[in-house]
Image 1 (tube, rainbow, N blue to C red):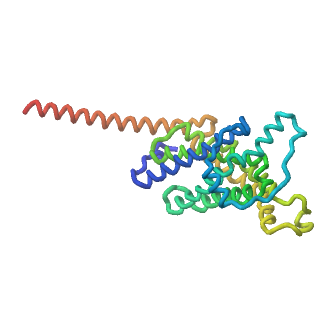
Image 2: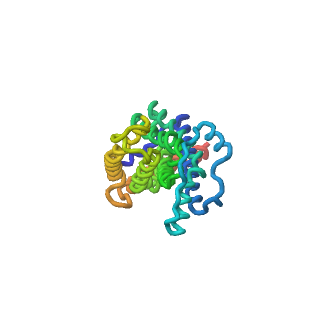
Image 3: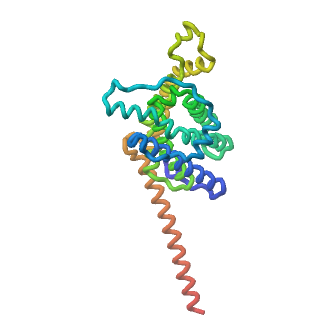
Length: 300
């Protein structure tokens, strides 16, 4: 990766809009991430991270979820039972904010469709749509998914990955790369991507009618939606492998093959050195012009 990768973009209203959008998205996802952590640490004593107006707005447009039996963790060690119980309550605590923030991500499809960002519109649409399906079609439709401990796993992975992603985009837009943002963007996925996929698969599984016989034995009671989601589960594994290997290849291209990302770090340093060299050259030029002006004034 050369320093030219970080070429400063032209100043425009579009750049300003994208910077504001990415900063707001960062703040909202950071609030989701902090909310998950706070609830896992403090439980019901955690301060509310969702405004009442947001909760009411989301509940107005989300359907009544299909009920399911409550989960019991009495067989586990008390500390483990408390931890798992809090995981089942994360949706009720932070769910409305997740719905709102994730739904606003449809703007990213618009950005890519109009060519405002360097992203494949189809890939962006698939990524956003898959998350919207998980939010609107699974966790908000089925209490068995909303109260699954894996909801907390999924949202933790989503939010932390977005907290790493949006600052990187802001730096790119401003032509001011940060090594930490670059490293986080191309490193956090190593753990968070499989974690998020695991959470998504478990939520889909939790929403299926387990009490019925398999559909190839007796399809009675299995809706078209259930059959489609059941068919989607096996697709996750090859999809995970394909995308994960591509992300690893991108990491090697940008950061290098070592853990610290020496290649990316060197590229950021080169960019900053070139920027400082241009700044000093411009400063020296201004100083020379000022001195010449003073000399000419003294001869008058």
